[in-house]
Length: 116
Length: 112
Image 1 (cartoon, rainbow over the protein chains, first blue to last red):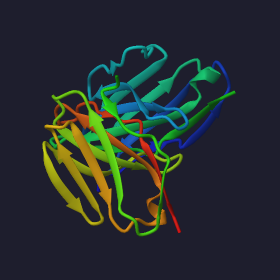
Image 2: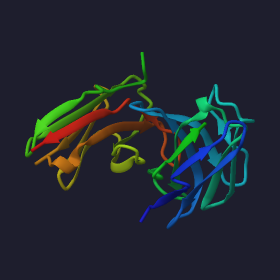
Image 3: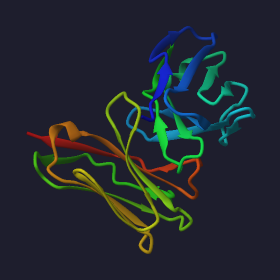
Image 4: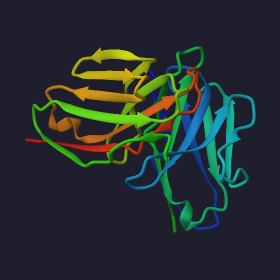
């Protein structure tokens, strides 16, 4: 149980284009999902908290117009990187917390984004 | 000073050794404590989840929380090469899907 998937696992895009990453909780409902960014050999940096049916809460320094988050259902959240630039290249990971659960967060396998 | 401090390692041990991984923290409001294992280029995997002080055991893993000292530990018994990964501690003030504060992670290598 408690499986979170991400799609795609790896994407290469050209500078100036937009990329959408999906995060799904496969066997549980998740009122809250989180989006993280991780640089090589560094810990996870929380970008935003996504609650189903409401606007995401972004961490300080994260551009909400650049990183669009939508949490349209209890099993799906999406992160769209708009007008991507090479500095947006990173490992993006989502996590989900089960509705009514005790607070454990389960992580997806991550999406590696390379912007050329 | 970071809210959560964790020695980045790398920590290298022989197969079969007992591994001790630790984190200290400064926010006394933290009540929920987690340990995650992350293999290279993969998402973190939840290993242990504990509330408040005390011990919790699951197979070869034991998590300890000492809130009075603001110190948490993860012990791995009979370590295996497959345990080689980065171990991240994480904590939160409340459960119920609130955001986590992570340590920087300790890189562990278990050698044959």
